[in-house]
Image 1 (tube, rainbow, N blue to C red):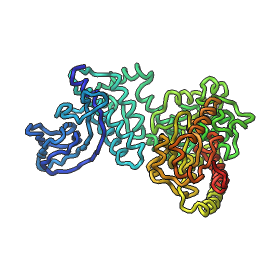
Image 2: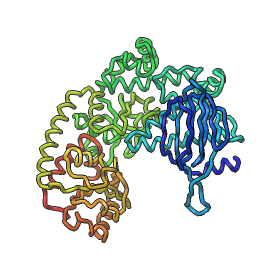
Image 3: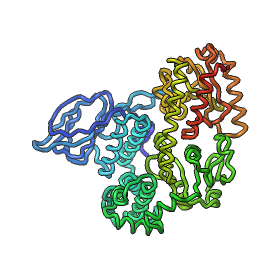
Length: 538
């Protein structure tokens, strides 16, 4: 690695803005204080950067330093289609943990490798960056840094073609674009190889041909759609990349040994369900189903009452125990929005596996689980009862509290958090419509805090619960000690809610009420009524 490469790898990069421009207009302007990357999907003419002229044509990129003056000259009748990506680059100052703005980085002129793949990645970055969801914005910055790293590697004169990286690029492309028209030639073009050489390298690395791998991806998405939706086979076939539903059915049966309808019926009417996440277990219980197998520990107390459920792990599922249980359906929940983990792929070898997206609302989770097990009507009735109950309790609690704000504080082993609008917050702030302290609106899930930072929320009341309780005796004792230490803390004693005696406790319930599931939320409605209408707090 040369000196320039080493400097690039030590920088910090932060995406600031990304725009897609379609224009046939020539112009001149000075760029902002950020670094700017221009990626031309289409365009013909030339571009002048700080007095240096470069030919402009499609599939080319340019890097502008902060404050650079750019002049874009387009040929008459040749509109340009390009992306403008502005980002912050910081370099080490020489002092420990101190960074300063970097000057020019990378070459000014870029020949973009795997251009079609890069453009797909840029479009994904743009969509996530302009999304309101903070997790999507964070993912956009991660994807941007990955793309920038790939461009830097390609621009390095010492960098040799990396077959593994090229094949990996096509794997990611298939995972994200499985529904589109993908051919072996297109994948080979993305990898920058001949079709035959690409196929040989792909099979050597992955163990199957590119098109076989693509079919596996499509089949896995089809399985999810078959049990999570009521879409027709035709719609599902088109949705996963097959133009013909009959061809899809033949491929599905060849891959699973069953027709799509037989596959759905096998899952919908089985009583051998393995639940690998507490939140899914809670939904099953709310629907009147005790799982055949489940992850069981004391962190979620309701699982301790199971009489017939096979334990397949305490915190994470044990693959050997799961395999020995021989379930006919596995339910799990993951953070990612594409590409299954290695462990998930191993689940598929044991039994049909349905992965529920983590970031969906609990009501959507509940209805999805009900749809899988054929209890749609029961789910509708349960939710109607829940909404009626929540409205009744909300009126009673708000009548007493008025506009008083409630802060949800989680206490863990040497850690503390403020819960936001998910978990307990979805019930208190959403269903019960209680006042949210200033600052909580910026917390989607939770935020770790110190005792002194709690004062910033200026809450009228505090609901004290658990944070990351794993169900063992050591955690139980540690959290009890943290609660005792909290009450001895001068910062804690100065809080408005503490001084007013409006701190409400449910730390002894572990995660009975904090699990993001229908059962926990129903129990939390009753608990909230008991706690907030009671005068007892300490």
